[in-house]
Image 1 (cartoon, rainbow, N blue to C red):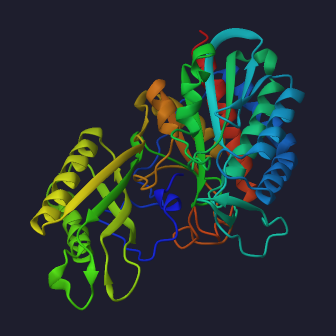
Image 2 (cartoon, one colour; image 1 turned 180 degrees about the vertical axis):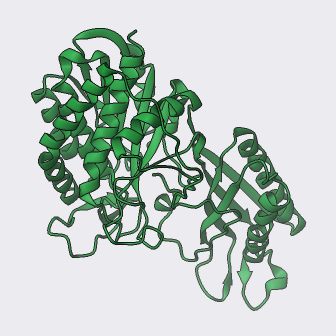
Length: 455
């Protein structure tokens, strides 16, 4: 899940401005009610999925460990993509490689006519140093922001890729019974591009290259691992993960001697005042009873010596929202506030806001349709979740066709999910016994989706 912090590392001063926090750990909002028994046809399909998932579990875990030990940054998932492509070709799928630089698309055409459903997994890792402990811990290195860094699958994309590889094997074994087509999307660069000068990446780039034109799906599903009881699935209807915008504010003044500040226009206190002012953009301008929002400043850079007043200060941060109208309002108010504060000090502020990911919107009808399926898959271990403060470029797919993005709990057995290390933490842990649930969930959602539309 994308965090703009990883794109602005190495600041000389760091500041964080958290206005309204959304919980990363899902909480149960309502109990699930009993659902009607599935039709004999669906029951037979789900029985096949159960058998197939059990048969592939050992390979699933082996793939996950192999990918975990060899992480690759966004746009450089060459080894991972080759592993995926070889597997899909061995299953007899129609395979396209090199999509959005390193992405892989697999097409499984069922034995019966029908609609098209897409399943998506992301493949990229993060510039995080993994602690020792796992026998398959990463020792890989890569280049991020022009610097050599250690790499780790600290967000679980290794698990996502392995689960979708296993799902492809399960469903290819049921090919004659599939009423339609399944598209497997193995996506690069969900966490952002590491190609110098890249202006687009991940899901957006795959769509720009036309993956939905040849085989446009009627629905798309995605699954993300996170803290939670192992094997439990969490979901939310409507807005699910936040939009993500990259914020940069450059304050320009007049430099000079630190002992004679009256002869300067010092941008440092002006920048500090802007940081304080950002609080009011949310706390006094946004209607938080309608939708939450977050503005965080993650880096501040300015100055070269303790006795020199800098000419300028640059701040970078992130803007998160769950409503497009509020997102636009935040952009306008941030710009007005920052330029106004700078002007009041005889200085200038240049505000640059780069849209990154839109809000992930789960389709209400699709969520309602799939909840009975997920309850069967998990033996009723399904909970409705609170909003997620992170963002996801699955949102681009869900803007094109009805989408459903769910979460799978993978906290280590016996550990409290509320205190477990979260995604993007070097101690983030994946309970591998939960992964088979993800395979059953993705396979069952795809088959139920197609079966319901084949009548």
